[in-house]
Image (tube, rainbow, N blue to C red; front, top):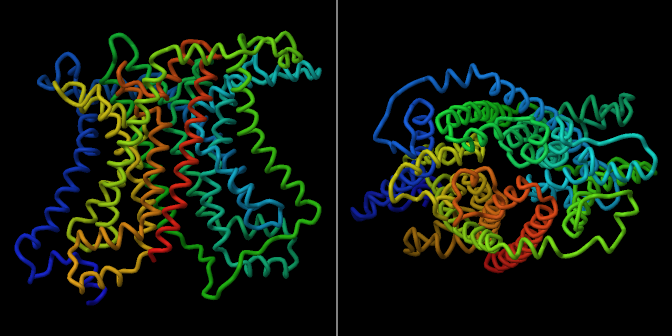
Length: 587
């Protein structure tokens, strides 16, 4: 059996029975229907809302009055233009800072002899797992202009300076701190794959190491830098938690916070929210398209045909400076916010007469933890979050496996359409997914709205591109000869998948389901429009505590959410390692 024939499902051969000949078209049709249900239908309803005067709650969908009034009003609205401008400034500034930090980290880890590089590389990814709202809350405690811990410490030292993270500069700093890992992932990979002889040639010509860095190294990985920058900008543009925590107190609206305000008004402006959501989605789609063009059009060939190892620059005594800079970053984005949350969570009142009051143990107690666990909604939100996470991981994992297998292991007609539909959510921020699902289901009697399932389906749709991409790597590592051998032995397609593909791809399957679970637990944007009092999840309850003005409860619940995420990550990492070892023995 040739590779070409193996690439097509055995069910498509002429000798197969009629049922098997129809298997591939039915399979592709089923996947297209599922993706249409998850992705296309909500987006169509979002457009319906933007060009309609109907109210989905009052009128349902029986009344449809086409109108461009909302689009025209949105484009001419000064508040929308200001929110759009604020979003560009905050995300643009955050992206510049993220590029500086991410590029510096990738160079330190890949191209220098800085000590403990493995620890630095692993620890630098921690910010990716911090929920944005938790990061925003922590920095509101640290950088509040009146009661911030940093300002209290500066006053105690005698330094006449005040931090104010309730500002545009605060948004930029927090965005840059927490989304630098996206730039690091792209640039570190490019640096590992770059031929060091190109740099050696520059130094032979008389250029210093740092001149070579800025005239040869960084220009050669410019596509990776640009791709990481665009991804960081896109992610920041769709974030709600950080602007809600740091921008709202200063009345700094970005597109995400403005969309939420539109639905929170009385009466809710669902149509206007849909129009602004489409504007946000269009901007995001353009940026995603630009990133894909950068990645697909890379013309900077830096990988030679001969084998090589990335060169480590001997920094001498300066290696301790780079190590110190890495530790300083980790201290700022991990240690400081954690200390702030712990102090605020255990302190009865977040007021400090002076810095010495921070160490007054009589002011600390479990009162805030007792308060949140006395609230029945706390355990309900934790239980709901676990249920949504499990449902999302199982449904999303199975669907991603089916999509990934169809795209990467077959040549059936329609697989490119499946690939396209499963990639569309990349360009849709979580908040827009929430608005789209709101329009898709709120007006339908007896529908999914108000149930755990609507949250899970929205999360599956939101994160399906990440899961499929994660699984595709595992599929590409499995040689097709293994499937051919099973088919020659008389195994059918499903039997081959169950006995060959699933055991060998198990580490990737577990990793992708783990990713889905973690993303579902920390997701806020998609939940804001879809929860009810019975389906409140942790991210939403945390926002409620914060908007209620009780910093102690907010910090306590932030720690609870962080600890739960940490335990889940530990368990799933252990499961992934066990799956990898089992797959290795099976191979």
